[in-house]
Length: 319
Image (cartoon, rainbow, N blue to C red):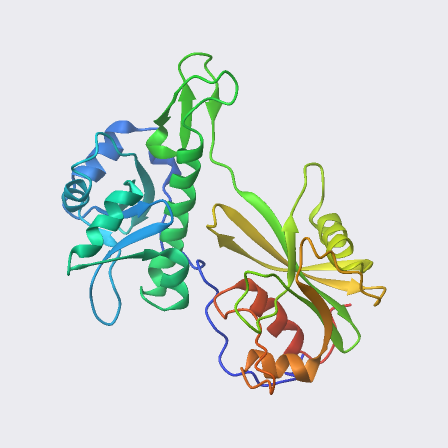
């Protein structure tokens, strides 16, 4: 298919393209993990809730520290949890959780940058190659922070298998990290697409509709249900586009295009500030940030813009 509109070079999809070998077979071997951690080439990411610690540098700040450097950063804390993320060649990469208040205190250090992961991506404050591992670390450590007690019996749990399981000594239950699936979709009707706004969005920004997949629900059914619930639009066929890890806190965005069968909007104001149909030409101007009213599409690092661009850049609809 030939291009319908020339939108320039495609942006990188944030948090994707990991260069790490997760080396899952090593998670069951404490001796192997200990040897990797003892290797002077080992590095760790330092995560503090929503915050990430980095070493100041040019052209990018570096989020990797030696394990000794990370230990000094959290020396005032009684305990901290460390997880094994994988290997880059022969060097292991870990992630350690420190208290957010500890991280905020580190902002006084001139050699460090302490900021949130979203700002890192949108502001290009770290090399794109680091973003997938940071997303993995933030999601995994966030899961650990929320599962310190057994949901089966309420007793404390402990981290095992290099951070990829928590065990309850009281009832023997084993708990594994989870990812929350979220559908994010562009409903299409002829030469128009449906975009929505949430109150938290930047002024003038519009994006795809999205929502969590419910238990016992297919991706396709979730797309149809969420579009109907949020905008009152009935959809037919659904086409998968791509996915994106979304570490806020630990989701997987499942990008789709949907065939709109109706056009009359009934916006759920408890979910959306507004929703409306946009013509192709207007959406092009939004993506290029040339809209006369200052309207824009989602940020280039987010899958929403990639879903929109995929519709704009081809001659014929996916349906």
